[in-house]
Length: 58
Image (cartoon, rainbow, N blue to C red; front, side):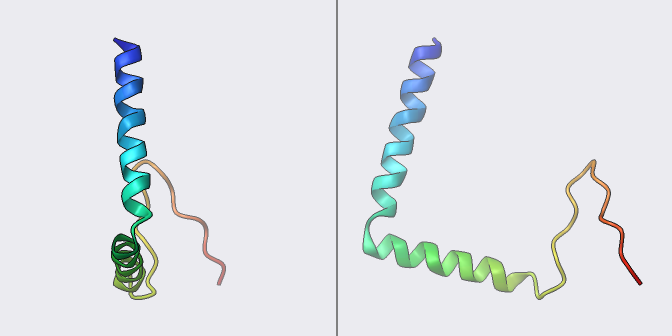
């Protein structure tokens, strides 16, 4: 069963890479990344659950 799972994951990865090579998909990816970067508004991201935020220096 492990072999089948690895083969399926590998096939999906190949499909993703092939789709990412297409120019119209590259533009969609760039737009999504830009939108994600702009969404934060410069406030920083939320801490992951179970982690403590870094100390702030005053």
